Length: 240
Image (cartoon, rainbow, N blue to C red; front, side):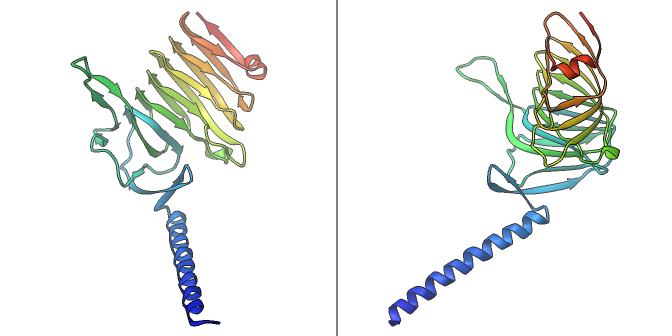
């Protein structure tokens, strides 16, 4: 083999080994929780343990993921906008990504932060969200479910939006939705022990793969309800 070919082969082999090394290092960080994969990209994240709270308030976010946990932890990208804030005030965790814009001298417009925030949350007394899209995850262990009491205003609550290898379980869900909010059960296998829902100018929509053990709904005339046959038969009452 010519010397030039040996040099070329050695160079290509070195580049290949470097690429393999980078991927192995990224995978090690991913397994340790330093990275999260989103849309086939690695996101470097910060995770922070929080002191226990009784209440959570969230405002102005387009991707707030709430997962059941036995510890209070918030995770987010290492590169977050300056307007993203979280703090604990008394017994309440307040998270905000809301921004405002003033265009052509008009009144300011409320906007949502697009970056994802992961909140690992045990049971709390109340979760209040305004102008926010919440993605609520369950647990594969039916004995480890967490009950949720959630108030929505101009917000969306998606139940189990991420596909999972096994059925995901949820405890009791009490939801009060108003001001054009929506409660959407995604079409991924899930089991919710009980849902109690109050709708004011809002929407409830289930899916064939979402099984609800007990269901009660109170809705005004401006609200809409869409149920599949199995969950409709479990409906306790609907009041106008």
